[in-house]
Length: 124
Image (cartoon, rainbow, N blue to C red):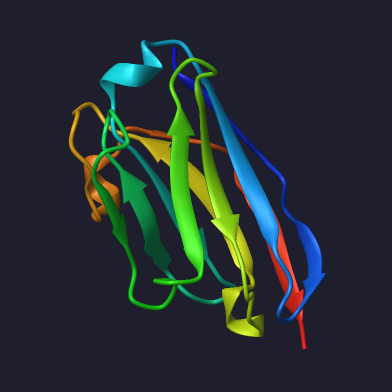
């Protein structure tokens, strides 16, 4: 059974930074693409960023491009999301996800395992 555990969320002022982590267990981490999604109150789950199995290919939502950076350390079975220049509209529960494939995807329905989420709140 694959387990994904997010950490690093919290409360930060606009313009600040946070780094989220996603620790994975249960399958060979380096063989699978990973992604970050988020869900704000009253809204659907939206794509944030995704990374291929090796980290060589990354995708970002237009809303976070240039501010967020996705990365992974396959030796540590961990994925990261560095979030800079945070805005109040970034407030959401952030989820990491793993898909049964090597290539990154922006589509939530292509991911088969999800973490429990970590809250990020950006105050104005």
